[in-house]
Length: 181
Ligand SMILES: [Fe+2]
Image (cartoon, rainbow, N blue to C red; front, side):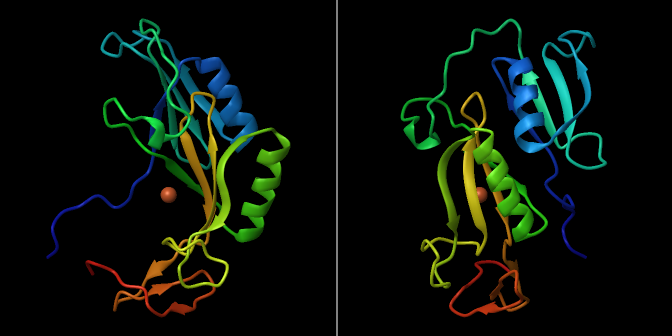
């Protein structure tokens, strides 16, 4: 009997300064659909505006949060630039089903004028064109209108029973290790 645990990480909520702008951006740039949008205090227990968005069939995979009573300041464009402040989230990641889908999305976000802050890059210290980092996935990082960093990726490695990482082509990445099995 293993310890109780959640099955998976599923949705992410971003706080935004201008919900109309962000909703439009997530729809146009990343293909999210609007499930439902609710004003602050529409439910007397909820003091913020909540917009539920989805990529697939579940009710929401992204929540846009906005507090109309708050004065929003700009955030640093890169998480590493925030040298004096509370701990913030660093990035969240959206997965493509295939490398072809990821390349098509890369073309799309470029055409739509996305702010690209890193990549495209292959996170690998094993593969010849890798960047010396970890995961075996290919990724590009963009910023949403408030500067929240979003990773768009494909082909993340899986972990074999002995801790060896297996890439998307089923190849065992010799030299990789896993701290906890
Ligand atoms: Fe990441």
